[in-house]
Amino acid sequence: MSRAAILTGLSAAMLLVMPGEADGRQTTGTAAGTGPYFQGYNLHQELGVESANLLLLPAAFEIQAGERTRLDFYGAWARGQVESDGQAFQLNGPVDTRVRARVRALPWALITVTANLPTGKESHTTEEAVVSSALATEMLAFREASWGMGAGLTTGVATAWSAGGWGVGLGTSYRISGEFEPEADSELVYGPGDELRLRFALDRNVGETGKVTLGTTMQRFDSDEIDGRNLFQAGNRIRLDAAYAFGVGRTTWSFYGANLWRERGDVTLDVTGPGGDVVGDTTFHTGTQNIVVLGANGSVPLTGTYRVRPSMELRVQDREAGPGSGWLVGAGGDVPVRVLGSYDLFPRAVLRVGEMEGPEGVRRRIWGGDLGLTLRWRP
Image (cartoon, rainbow, N blue to C red; front, side, top):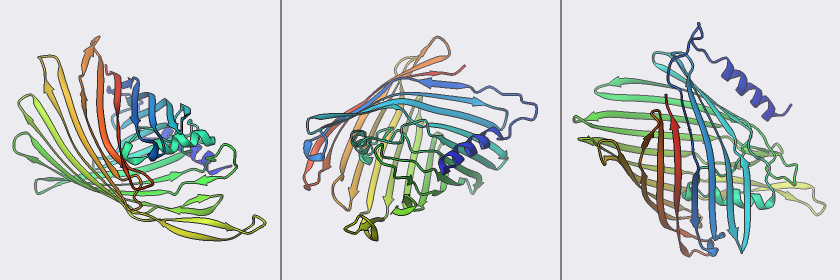
């Protein structure tokens, strides 16, 4: 039995045995959401692609399963399209399904189990790989990129306490990823490295309506493997973030910033002889990468019933290797609308412009944006 199959069964089993109320009673707190979402960019041919876009139809559902357990589910159908050298490439189908259980096991401990179920398309043709690669560009921040990453299981625990007027939070999680075949015309088996994540956070009330939050996150990865051999050792990632939220009358604002630093990684490639046999390997380093995110969002009343929620965000990426470096700024917002008592509509629009460095070291202008219409139901 493959590691992916074992993980799928283990994920389902752990979710089924999550502790709830002994008498099976359920409390209120059900919610569901769906709605079309479009994200697209126009780029320059010197960046490798002229355009990239994503159409997403997500569905999310959340229920309270007893006083201590909460379950949520996420799935989506997606269509990605990329234009390169006058050709259009597509990748369509469902993405992986994610199921999460959060359990208040003790008054001071929250346990989380997240299962990634391999419902998405793991094996891509050469044309589909063009789409997956373009949508995985970190600075563009597409909501879905790969469609399928095989079975996976993440377990975590978090705790919080008060100290000298500060709220202190500490959490850790470990993700196990299953193997899959990324190429439709090859039998190569790819095994993503497991991930350990540590999180430390502080928050404190400021004045009558303000709150400041500070945090740091560290990620460490095991080696990715191809057919059981080391392929890539990702460098550690360290994230620092801060946020300040406050209210003025019926208006609220939040400002945030984050810095994500990724260390160098090691790529190991096989060296083959004249007959095609593997005679050795060679290792080279990938460059460091740093991403800075600065943003703000608010909630401003228009009338007694309606509010507008503006947002703005700046992303700046610096890559040691050069290509992919650049900046992207976006501005937009949504307007929540209550319909039929327990339903809310969120029409949303964001416009983005920026620059990205191509393989020849020249920066080219990019522009695009998001359009979405989310429907949420909460009884």
